[in-house]
Image 1 (cartoon, rainbow, N blue to C red):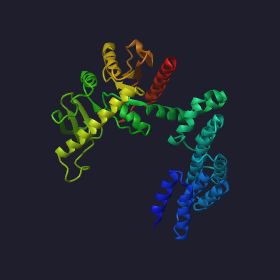
Image 2: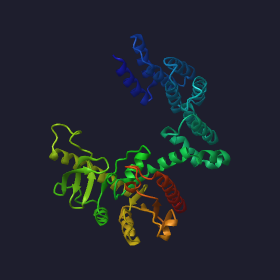
Image 3: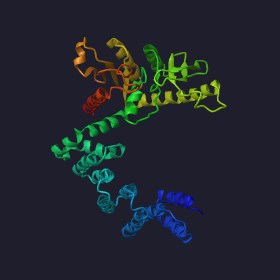
Image 4: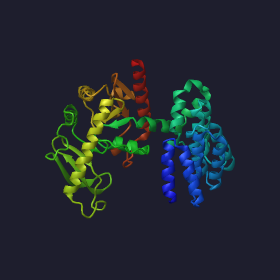
Length: 396
């Protein structure tokens, strides 16, 4: 018996609600002088399942004493207790955390979550506002933020306005919305938009491009013959974004070309072009299956960046192609032009599920390498998502 095995076995027992067996194993480990702060946390969960709140609190107290100077230690305990739905104990932990660490932003994030799960949405909003005074909103605030937005009518407008109109809240909201967006090309810009929000989704077109008509053919054919042995090859060339030579994956049938990020320096010594091609084929076939599933689910907003303006008829062709899988939403993104009357509109409605949006400039011409012009991408994503959401509500 070692501490790693004990933690693993106790966790497994608790996942199957076998609290008495878990407690027996913990007592056995104690007799053998096996020690870890994690064991006290597991003991608290076991006592919680037993309905023994007094013993649960005692176990948490022992856990907290193992590292009284680390705010993250306290936050972990509070979050685990929230999962166990012992909200009074979680509140007690958070009160002590705020007392011990008055300048930390972390307790307010967890406090917002605790308020939200108890349907105190105004309290959640207030704590998210407080967190911004001590730190920055991040992914840990997603659940509370989404519940606040969903239940906005239960919150004083002054409080909800103070939260939702802040730059940090807007960035977090856009980040949440972006998780429901997927690129259709024509280059890597949408991929960098995701990266600007610390998101790294797996997507076929994230780091790839192909001719517009080939894209429509690929979608209409249900990706038939894509990345086949006959049409797949590797090419070697310069990545203009990084200034480093790398291998590219190419499908000659559809003129699809994608970054592989394989360079001479990051591949194994026994790798060669053939083995890399095999890996790339498998990878891109997996991504092709994934995007077909996403198209069939029809839950995402698909984004196509038009590097050069095209006729509306062409955008409609693309929209019809993705709609053969399901009723999909499409956002075409163009660069603003001072000579085009429609460029006074951030969004142009072509059809109920087809929009044309505008950004001030693309990342290749804004002077900031690999950095999209987020000042216009963020509000565009926000506005397009609001429109598509309103369309869905009308249907329902």
